Length: 304
Image 1 (tube, one colour):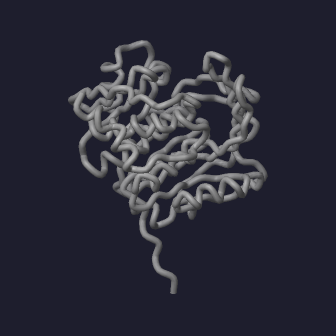
Image 2 (cartoon, rainbow, N blue to C red; image 1 turned 45 degrees about the horizontal axis):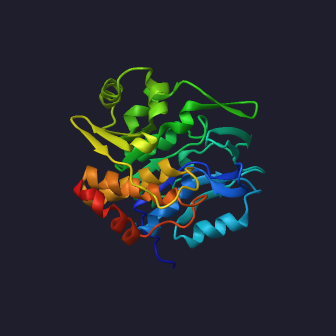
């Protein structure tokens, strides 16, 4: 009889992607999707980390090997149908991005969860597109008693033809009651709640259920709101700038792990921001920093 697999500390849910990155300097295939950045968790010492995702038969074995080698639990990774989600990200010389979508994998449902997944302390959802998650995924994660985190990006993007365009967050009222933490960037918050002060938008959000809201602001750092406080997190400087893709994912996953470890929101924000700074230094979800590297770089920011 085989031993029972231990429950992961964090489960990250969303489609993996076969990304094509095009810029004036490079054209490169890469493993993508917020779920791929779950590889940060074992790198910084999480006590078990898993993903729940769906790919097609075209998904490269090389990517599966990379995910497995990172230490992630892949029991929630299923192969369904011919095509994986595939994004083409095109950057101009100023760093502005346009996107095309060549394929989308099947919808994720709570049937993908194992008993071990539902014993996790944290679920983080990072859909790439609005139709990616069945509501049952959020419902069961919430019912499990885990802290539930959601990056709203995918809900604010529609696919018209092969183009990615902004959309209203139509599912907002159905979802917020199942979520403890929401993550936006500044533009996403404006898209979701209109041109109102951040504090007003956050008040609307926290009335609906979530108790924490993270707003990233590019080079201006980030803000973490709770129901009664605002904590400003400075930008943590990288040694070099290569690619910003995945910074929001590494920030949020780093924040969640450190928050569950310490209960200190400011420290967790700095930890997440430092993880994101390392992400800037490479293309794709590779070369994740160790806890020692993160703590060393963020040390000077703790005393600001």
